[in-house]
Amino acid sequence: MTAPASAAEGDAGASGMVEPGRGLGLLDVLRRRHLLALLVRKELRVRYRGSVLGLAWSYVKPAVQFGVFFFALGEFLQQRASLPPFALYLFSGIVVINLFSEGFANATRAVTGNAPLVKKIYLPRELFPVSSIWVALVHFVPQLVVLLVAALALGWRPAPVELSLAVLAVLVVVTLSLGLGLLFGALNVAYRDLENVVDLITMVAVWFSPVLYPWTLVRESLGEGSVLLWLYQHNPLTIAVELFHRAFWFPVQTAPPGAWEIPPNLVVAGVGALAFSLAVLVVGQAVFRRLEGRFAQEL
Amino acid sequence: MDAVQVREVSKTFRLRHDKSLKQTAVARLRGRPTAGDDFTALDAVSLRVVQGESVALLGHNGSGKSTLLKLVSGVLRPDTGTVRVRGRIAGLIEVGAGFHPDLTGRENVHLNAAILGMDAATTRARFDEIVAFSEIERFIDTEVKFYSSGMFLRLAFAVAVHTDPEVFLVDEILAVGDEPFQRKCLARIADLRAEGRTLVIVSHDLDRMVDVCDRGVVLERGRMVVDGPVRDAVDHLRAT
Image 1 (cartoon, rainbow over the protein chains, first blue to last red):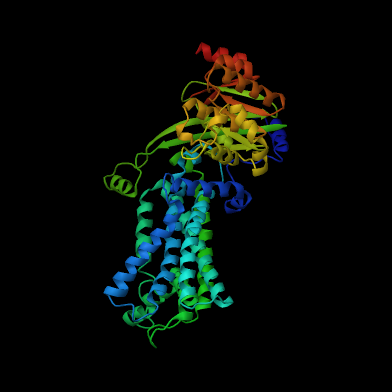
Image 2 (image 1 turned 180 degrees about the vertical axis):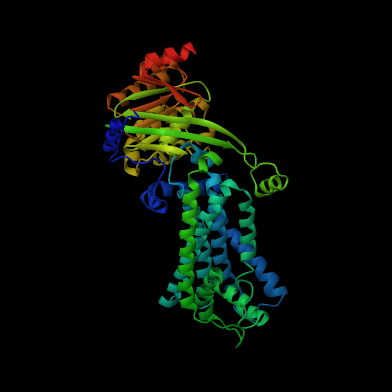
């Protein structure tokens, strides 16, 4: 079998043969949409197993979160007068951060959470983080419905500009959370510490973007032209949150002059944030593929 | 034509003790080596399986049979050497690995069939056949966590043997269910063989291997020691 003649013959017979366990990464996920859909459905079924309200919980949780912020910040801390309608301002930002946090945190745990499958059967492993992002999107829909109902009640009307800004924001957040999820999820296989790092990141994400306060406060405090302000403004989540503010709150806002302004070059910033998120996705996928070969033995 | 080519493949596992960054850092600081013990599961193993062949992988526990199977299925990657396969591979490395206890039998059939590479239309077309094979029609809409272990394995096996792979990797799953069901499984395996599918089977049930396979390969501590007619392989294993 090691003789040169038979080795050459082996090479000739090797046409049409593939190395098992080496796929095309995210492209393979596109080919296995049926399986992806079933994995998403499984995730949702399992999440709400034995619960009476089921998916209704994905309405309850953001509503309660919203209520807490609304009363604590709007009523007790008197923020409500500065950015009316403050409820809409808060909610349009929170849903963006919720989408990011859930997608990122779940994608990070996706590979370790599916250890029995990863260890026993070869599948494109990207399926697991991608299905986590889909689950986050499914949970995002009811929040978006609540947001749209509230906005419509306050006089907001859909227009092409607003809707395209919202779509851009969702694209940024989905791409970013998938990219970071692939990166942290792959590293999490070897070092489970990463889960806790991700929990920390999602915990501070809501404060490092202008969800609970206007971004102009940050400008006042950090000063125009400072590096920190630049970083704050170029945080893709800041941009996504501002895109949502611009899309859903700005058209109906009645804030006093000077309380808020549209961040400069918001659309350009949005496209830039999408480009940055795509770069994160490329890096995340590269690291994931690099480490993927060791998943089965390290889990 | 070859269905599987394994060339000079070695696989070493590092039995790691350090699982978190903190533990690794502490170990480094104390000057304790962070590397664990190495364990060579496979040592320069070469194997070619021709299409339509049925090969028994034999050996005692820890000889590297399952590792070899996992390398062929793509779950593991070789440290050195190459593995190539032709056509779709279904690894029954463990029956029911993709089953979720909180889903019903029906949902699990669909999910597991998709995991093993079947598309939606094929699964729907074969669904009744799968359920009939498993003999659990009455409980198909019950959550799998309420199944007995026999029922669970029967359904999982039924799904697996109704997927349509060119190469079938089977790890110790012939011991499924009671006597009549086992006969049914063996009949199904014989059908797959007759259809010209390639089979690579790991089992400790030597007598059965003689019935099911033509060729036998014996592994001993990660090295291939016998490759020939299955009866010779079984005799060698019995002699050691």
